[in-house]
Image (cartoon, rainbow, N blue to C red; front, side, top):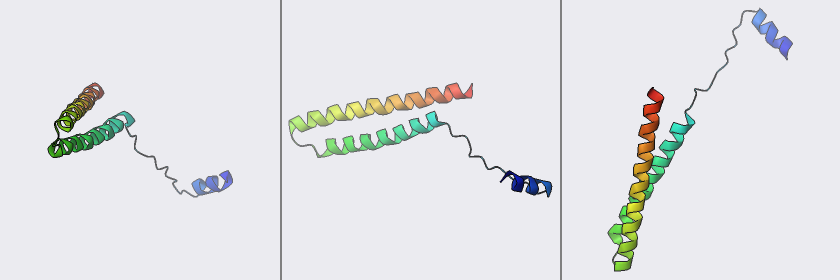
Length: 87
């Protein structure tokens, strides 16, 4: 196989190596987590909107507050990471 590659190079043909762009996996993971948290927050809002029993309302409020905290935490992590990456 290497003889074939050497032959191509000898003939003046350029072999291009296509490299994947480097993906910042930490930033990507945080973005995926944020999208997931956004969806869960929307579901929590919907659950709160349809709750009609006092116990279900309490549960929906608890869930909504927990999802808001999770969303805020991930958003804060993204901002912190972007600040560190820009230095």
